[in-house]
Image (cartoon, rainbow over all chains, first blue to last red; front, side, top):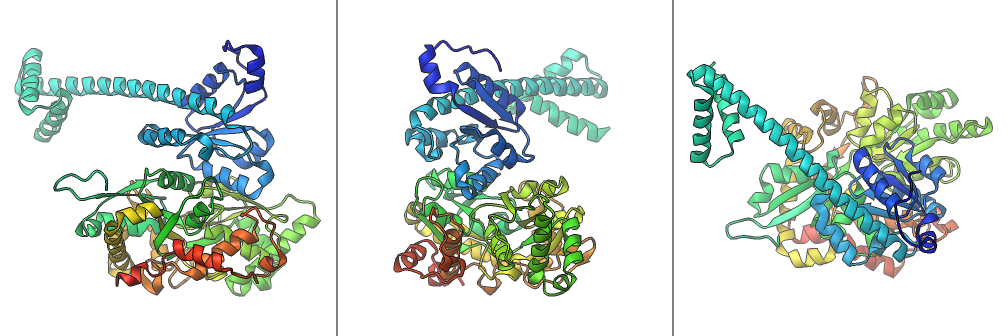
Length: 209
Length: 370
């Protein structure tokens, strides 16, 4: 288990966290890792992660977590509900986290109190910090992912522009600067991104050839 | 509907799970029936019934393709806070079955060939033989899956087992597996069988990991699998909008039932944004010629219907059956009584009023829509 990075007084930590086993179910390995790390840092050292759905029910029965964290849209939620519906003795609180597109929803849910998301068995004040932590972590993960996606997109755009420029130079006999200038002008005139102009050009020029 | 701007149609956000019986919603949107009725129908594909429930409960979705028992379970607050729900119409009937692993079917044939040659619904006797033999030999319990605790699939499976003297809580290991994971679970031998909606039975048969043993309708005539569920406050507030939506869905259902439109329906459903599957997997379902094992098909009339035989009408009889199942199997935190197990439960006035308020059997007829 990773070292505890939290600085709470030990007795508080004991009361709130040390005795709780938290299970994170997420097929997204990166997100699961971020959640797990966040929970450990927040003083919940007993965190486990399940990434595949295989034999989910028996694995949960074996692990006996006190609390489960899972993405709202994860199909495994139905399996969990089946598990807890049929065997009442296994009931565990389930906390769901939600992706960016449903943010309003979880905010409303939290305003309304976490209780609707939590099965009986654990005091709300102990669940709340975990939920809040999960959401905070989730948001920072989303931000990271967005930044990464943007970076990938920018790279792809650059490749596209380079290819269009090359094709333009060859077919219209232009210098690199002339080709780039022509594309910039088109982009400004059409009020479009340079990458979009490049994509249109590539389609058109490849049709010609 | 809140985001109405000048010149734009009011938006209705509906959730669905990628199964053949989401067809009516897809048709209403894609063929313009919704737009003709003055609605911008926005469909949202969801990964779990739990997500459908939560999103409808918190107003992220206005309404959704729901398992018939879901509105009742939501209203009873079985899984959290109670919420007043309405199901003004159903979304078709059929298209679900019990599929068992080929090795299990072979065992059933070995132990009770007679039951296997009789009507499909009677094959539970053979299954009971296998279960008894396994118990005698100290082998692990069979694991069987359905799709949700409040689904007709779950209740039908339990009913079928119990009818042959198998106690679903003690003699087998019942669990929930989401439909898209059913075939893989069968392939990995994590389950020995399941009761699931199409196209997943067809996938299992075509992949050689399952045999369709009996359809859900053959086990019990318990009405539509799915309904259009919504919160009662949204229903009241949306008023005419729900009528427009219902009209569009009725037209879509009539269209979807016509043989002449089958190819187009297959094309629509197989698209990436809907079922994301091969049209040829869905085709036998719509034709009523599903594959049972290998290349063997059977003619099962009305295997999946959308409009005919009042497939759009929720009934009180079905509501009563669902409530009875919930009680019988201890889902309402009450010990199942002997009367319930025998199916002789007295149906109280409260029950009647509760069901009448949820399953609006008169909604479509009053609008002269069916």
